[in-house]
Length: 176
Image (tube, rainbow, N blue to C red; front, side, top):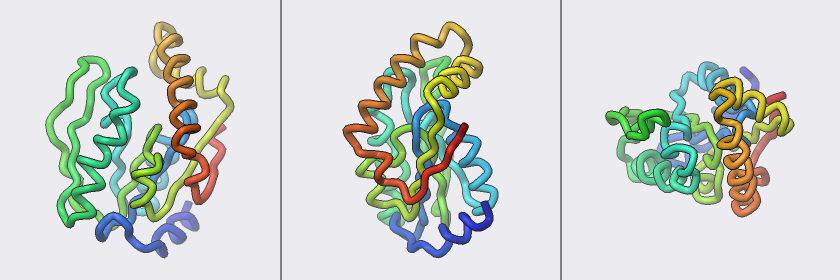
């Protein structure tokens, strides 16, 4: 992780003065765990797409929120901030200020779509076998979520194909 952090630190900022590191891949692949570890090595904050995407039916809304709340303010010299979405209450919470960090890690499904990738200094793709990802998702969200997970997996697969997301990556990591 220290070596990866050194590689990222050598990259030029592309979101204003911020080095934007995008960690994308399918749900349950291990992106959040990887991003937390990487953020510690970088000394950088993390924003999760789970906080920007408004629930199981909101995948298509994640990138516009990422652009509006995080990337556009950074590129124009402003402060990034967001309202975390609560998937249980189905409401956005209070604003969280991210500021103008030197490096910012954004992790989650759709984070490295074409538009956000234009501003990324480094893109990481994390993946794991479908069965592993589904089992992790159900373990986290409960047995009642299996149908939601299967639908989500189909939607994210279509998004990754449409956006050619994996090809945006500088490196690929196994989350298995």
